[in-house]
Length: 283
Image (cartoon, rainbow, N blue to C red; front, side, top):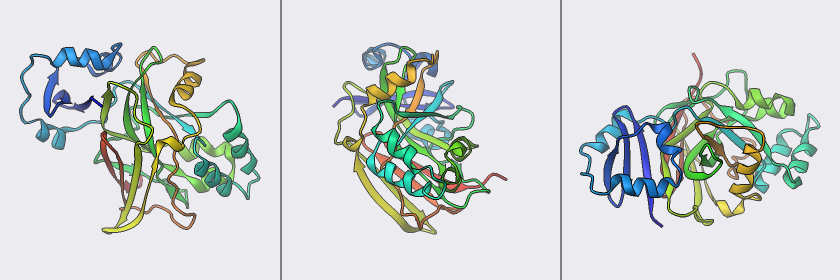
């Protein structure tokens, strides 16, 4: 499969294609909303010289692959997520809600983050100080352009307070939406064809250098299709700059685990790359 990797940096946008980098002379928001983006990028890099010192720019000046886009998320798209959400909400009596939405025609969709509150690769993500049970949620994240077409993919981390959401499902916005609760990156992959169903989402969590968690799952375990989720999101919403949609998680640490300040979360989805974030709290 052929693909471009688009890196957003303070030095501009760089496209990695066929083992070389090219500087793209176009604003991020205009670029990613160009129809038939893969073909547009092929034309844009043809005959252009290879850019120099790009790896330094990526290492030192990398930004999240986002401009004015909102970040949305889907929930209970994997069976394991359904089980975990039912477990956390059992005491509040909300467990049946997650069972019902897993089987329902309409998916769970919710607003996750503005671009300002989101972070990229190498930056801190936050856990809430008023939460006692916090987890990362590694998710394949769609980029959907302003016409509703899926144009690319990135890695997402939907940081979540399971204790707050488990107390009452109506607390979901507080459990999910807060400063630095969303991370995406390191780049936007723009493939010639849709991403393969055997693509793996992998996650590791480290504490003081020691591995606390490791698991992987293919995206084929999703109950819903990417196109289905995008269609529901665009039914009554318009996104002039496009949007990102996290597609749900199946990698859920055991109920005895909670994130701590200083933990490092590594999420890998090839060929997009690796999203690494350190856990912190708001000061």
